[in-house]
Length: 104
Image (cartoon, rainbow, N blue to C red; front, side, top):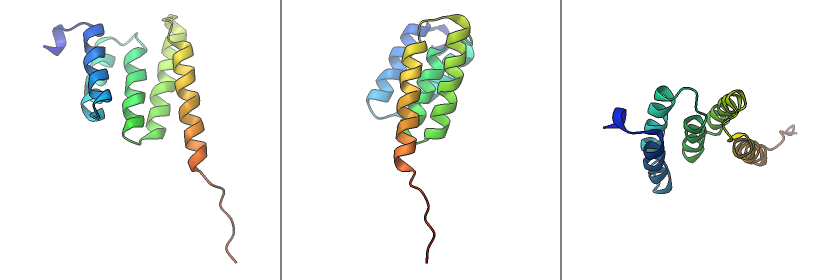
């Protein structure tokens, strides 16, 4: 089934899983899509969103950076969306990091 389904439908299924609190299933679909459609940034962006939903912020940033590079290379129109997602992830990461102080 998955090997015969086009990118659009697979994306819809993966988004459904993300929206219904099942990032693990979404991640599996996005991984399949990234292998079947290696020149498309959408699946990598989806992997980033799934990783973020699983509180794997560093992994999310890695996937989004890979998606950005791919999007820029193939001019697929996702650059602005990916940059926005990256900015949100890096801002979130910095909000939770507090400077360490010396104990007396």
